[in-house]
Image (tube, rainbow, N blue to C red; front, side, top):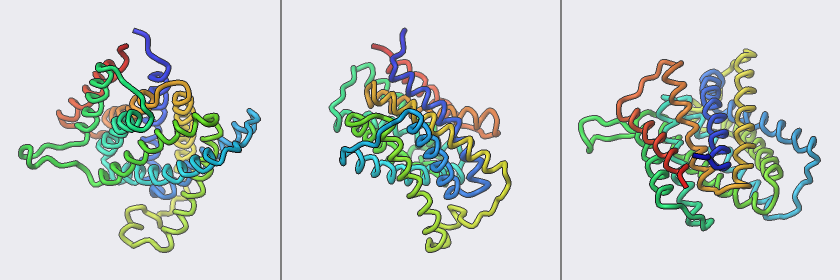
Length: 299
C-alpha cells in the first residue's frame, strides 16, 4: 500500500518535532520555557536565512504574503511558548498528547476554510486518530463524571494546539501565493523578534506567579543546556521545512493531521527513556493513533 507524499512529509515532520519535544522539555527545565522558546526561534531563523541566501531566494513583494507570514510568526511565538511551558510543567506524555489534537482541528479548518475533502474512510481515520490523542491526555478517576484533563501543563497545551492549527492552515494559504521558503523566513524572523521581546517584557512586568511558571529568573550558563537548545532548534526547523514542502505539494488536512502524531513519538520516548508511565486508557489512545494512520493512508 503506497503512502502519499503528504503523509510522508507529515511523518518526517512528526519525527523531527517529536524528538525536539524531548530536547526542549529538558532545556526548559534547565533554562525556563521563555528563554528556550526565544533560543529555538533564533536558531531556526538563522538556519532559514542561511538557506535562503544559499538558494538565492528573493524576498516576496506581495503584501498579503508579507503580512500573513508575519502574523503566522506572532501566532507561532505564542504557540511555542505555551507548548514549552506545558512541557516544562509536565508531565511530558500528557502535554504532548493534548497538543497532538491540533491535527483534528486542522482537518476541520482545512475542510471549512480551504474547501478540501476527505473520503469516508479518511474521515473515519482522522476521527479515530484525534480521539486517540485525546485519550492519551485524559485520566479517568471514579467514573465519567470525575473525568478530568490530567497534569498542570494541559491548559498551556490547549492554547498551543489551537495556535498550531491556525498556523498550519494559515501557512498553507500563504504558501499558495509564494514559495514555502519565503513564508518560513518571514514568519520565523517575526517569531524570533516576538519571542525576544517576550523575554524582555515578561521579565520586567509580568505578574510574579507568571514569572515563576515561565522561570524568567532562571540562570544556567552551562554549555550543555544551550547545546540542547541548538539541537532542538535544528530539529524544529528541519521538521518545519519538510512540513512546508508537504503543504505546498499535498492536501493541508493530510500533512497537518499526520504531522500532529509527533507527540506520539514523544510519548514513547518519555516512557522508554525518561521513566514516565501511562495508564491503560492512554495506551488505548496510542493504538487509536496507529489505527488512524492506517485508515488515512487508504485510498
